[in-house]
Length: 437
Image (cartoon, rainbow, N blue to C red; front, side):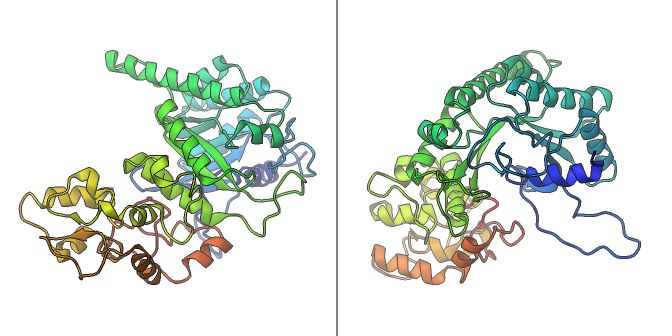
């Protein structure tokens, strides 16, 4: 029987394919009498709504699985070391890591051992033990197991801060091809019931102050990108539908990483990381900028432009919408301008109450003028007079884009610490953290 450290190494590594957390990529050498470590297996970094980087213990309860999903690193037919935590082991690890300030919470997922109900029971037992026996008040994110009894999921939601059901593949056809033991209803059914329960709980909490919380941080899901032939329009249309129907907190996109050969899977030279990045940008436009999927893409152009962010690409296809006069345009119109993000649009609306704005004011506010200057006027003047020629503007934007970004994006994981908010004037590269465009 393996010791706890070996279990942590195996089950921490097995959880790395879940995109709901991201590794910070830090590898500080440890020498002499030093406190703390950022290299312990299972510790990953995620981002809170206010931009803070938080550390989570991210592990699988078990990587023993009865399913044989073609894309999964833990599929039953793959030869890998198999291990399982007990609920006491997970609780002890979480609390001890928390006391040592290694982590601020727990991200707990699992392969399906024996059956969905058995696995969900073990997940529930673990989070219940953490809350009731150990008195743990930190953040807990738990994966709901598709196909398990909803009473088990509902009870887990009373102990977890966030719950997620991974949809994984964009269409039912792809699910039947690569994960025949799963079904669309097993995934969307729990997602819908969780949404109904969250809505009911929020109404209850408005009426009764002492009403218990129910997944207060909402629910999320994850989509694998590139394992199946669906185009970007299908993916973001699905995302739009999930946001509208189930009020998901967010959708995570995970570039497909081939982990074992299978004739049903595509042969990729490298994971489609740049495509993943563009989908995150498009997702941000859906959630915060008022765009619809059919505005960003259509049947004639079903895939996102790899050379340009989705908002700039939309603007070049809709030059009749421009130029926008900064001093009179409403907030929703400002959000459509490339280089103006949510924060800078709010600052513009607030600042122009006191005086009209010029281009120098926009730079101080945080507008990215290298993109915005082609689509706006200030006090009736252009930044520099030029024809609204889409091809010419496209070439200028591409020339002013950071050198090497595309090459870096297609050859390795995007670094969380390289990218600052694109809402700031000193930004040098497109943002993969905030989604500001």
